[in-house]
Image 1: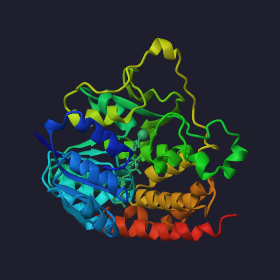
Image 2 (image 1 turned 180 degrees about the vertical axis):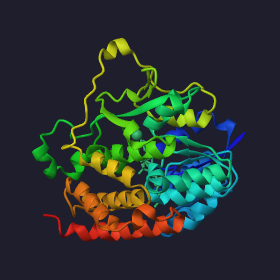
Image 3 (image 1 turned 90 degrees about the vertical axis):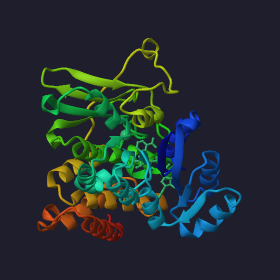
Image 4 (image 1 turned 90 degrees about the horizontal axis):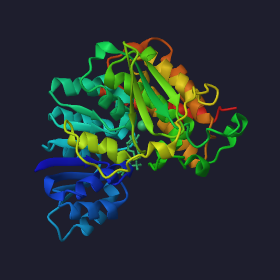
Length: 389
Ligand code: NAD
Ligand code: MG
């Protein structure tokens, strides 16, 4: 039996992962499941999968979780430290499906114990890529991509040498507003930004898809994970979301990964890696689909992409500023404090402010520096809200 833990088990990725686990329940020994406020879901999954431990990140939810699992052997804990401690429990495979920078510490903890880490939490690579990948290397631990584009690139690279790679192309659906007149974007509402044309995902990543901040993060994620230079990475708008990424080689060949927009493919690939096993996803009928379309992204519509290029070029702690400012701006948009287009303005201004001098570029990427930078960037980002024109 493989021992596994799932961090962020109650979210969209976490639930898709548990769906795969539940189909072959005898193959897994579930150690820890973690979640947030959806205590009923967390308790039900911990009970059904006979987890050793269930953890909510909110201390105020502890009693509710404890009560719901009172008649079971499941241990219960709460708070961010309890999640980090859960990540230190020995397992063969852990999924990091927490949303936001909160995924960083548990991911580092798992890697420090040599755990194979399936990483959906792109924010930890954006915020502290060199720290996370360095931690894996130091402990001989493997990081497997779960983001669909990065899983696609990873699969296209099997049996290849990085020296032969010329470019990596990640695709983008274009998000909820791809056909809106640009002038209308400033008025986009939360409800409008919260629906995705092709994928069913958590609310935050859905809004990030509409603004292209999700793709901006994925550019940085590509650089950090595959250690390619920024000029080798491209974004291609592909409305159908069937080709997830392409890798271009030095002989001119492009290897494309094609599959249905179902995250259980990327999760399942990471779960069974290095094997490939049958997965319950749709089989595409390409003749029925007929045609696939591609467009270059319009920089005026998607300012987030240029910000990502700047972050990749600046390096250092810029990624930590970028991610935290983006998270704070997104909180502001969700709360109705700022408009849709203000999000990229907030992130740009926060980067400007924190990039003056060379401190950001040259500082060491330690956990302390990353957490302090994250904290400051959220404060500066919120300060810009009142100054937006
Ligand atoms: P979600 O909002 O549906 O779920 C997030 C999970 O994290 C929940 O279990 C929640 O309880 C937990 N969580 C939230 N805040 C937390 C905190 N402070 N501490 C600990 N746990 C916390 O999000 P999602 O859409 O499943 O995305 C999860 C991650 O996977 C994100 O990094 C996202 O970018 C990435 N991702 C998601 C998809 C997708 O299809 N949903 C695709 C690619 C990548
Ligand atoms: Mg993705």
